[in-house]
Length: 119
Image 1 (cartoon, rainbow, N blue to C red):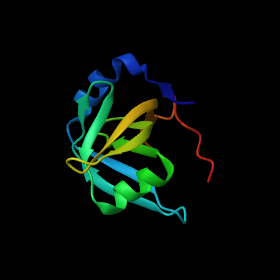
Image 2 (cartoon, rainbow, N blue to C red):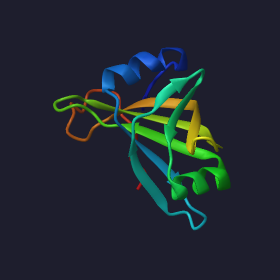
Image 3 (cartoon, helix red, strand yellow):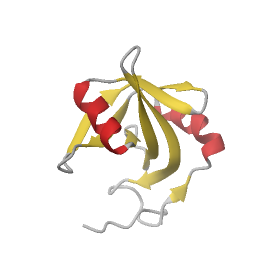
Image 4 (spheres, rainbow, N blue to C red):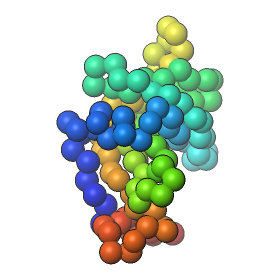
């Protein structure tokens, strides 16, 4: 089980994890494309500059996931799934969060709530 994150409180959680996240998109063949980013809030979306591959992936399927890694010694990382769109000027992507969870790390206390690993 994951710990659900209320989207209304998401900004506070993001702030506690720090400015750097990883943006995960998928290409036409289903392969993952991962880049490090520093997203900022723009109304109810998280925006970040984007390169050609990231922009093409978001334009093709409109999905993106942001991952904020856990700090050293922490028990959880933050995963934010969302719908993405390409912003042409300047070249960036905007992600509107649709789901966010705190995901327990494998070395964390097993009694804490966690996600179930399927594969």
